Amino acid sequence: MGQCLVKFNSPCLDWSERRPHLAGVLGAAICTHALDQGWVRRRSGTRALEITPSGRVGFRQAFGIESASS
Image (tube, rainbow, N blue to C red; front, side, top):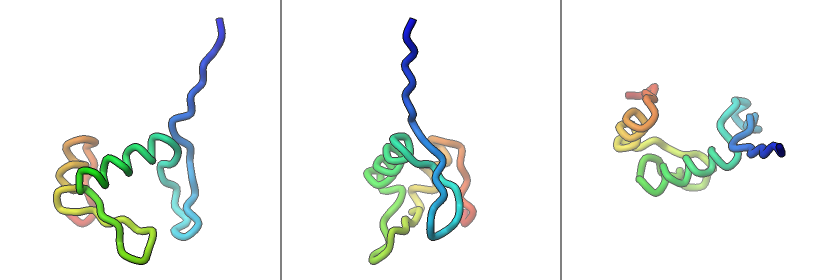
């Protein structure tokens, strides 16, 4: 029987922060969802995203993730 391998994410070392983060299709989908829901917003003039107050709640409820600044 044939094998189907789908890569949902890949480790990625950010060039500016030098920290690993979620990448690939899964990372892009979570990022898009978070932007659409207003959980994050883009910082003007940068690639950075900022977690909003509703994002702190959304990430906690959806993924069990607590923000360091909460």
